[in-house]
Image 1: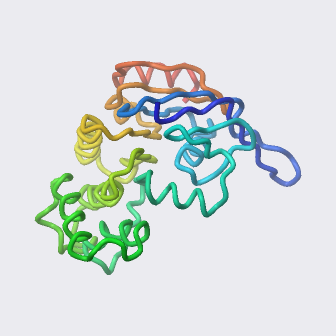
Image 2: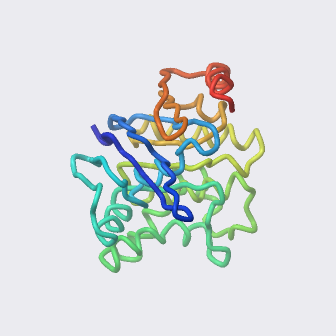
Image 3: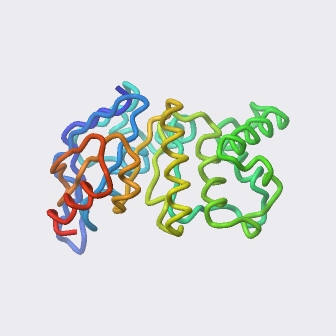
Length: 243
């Protein structure tokens, strides 16, 4: 078991009134699983992703990542876990415009290992990550020389270069056209088969259909799960939830 979340709640104070983003979420994810978290806007998807990615802490409940309770660690401790164990892919790519694809991919190794990896090894690992996403021949290109799909592939290479145990993807196809979206989701599926645990947060039934299991959130609660999803079955469930 890589992820074991039990009875997670998250409450924010908004102008003096509490907002309950999560209301007792319990979920287990095995190593190597590819799980999509799906739900209407305001369902708590992003809040849940932030907690799973150690970007935030729950108000109550426990979250064990790889056997360690990380629910209430300090900021520095959470940062260390993010740097060493978790890769992130976001909708907006978040690449540095004035650096090459290779240099963008190298950055996590600089942050996580701060001089403990020789530059030649760092470069070699970044090149392997770019090769894994099919962009070894674009290593010296800058983001403005790449298509949207290629930029997202660079972002995925950056997320996996540190060999994380968990890959968290937040609407990774949101800025891509339909064909590029399918290519990116096929890449995630391939990475999942390689053994990386993937949690995909999305509202897109087609993207969710590439996962092995879909978890549905509504009003801060898990309201159902689905194994071996298809785009149609996910869409039908979302329609029933009012999405």
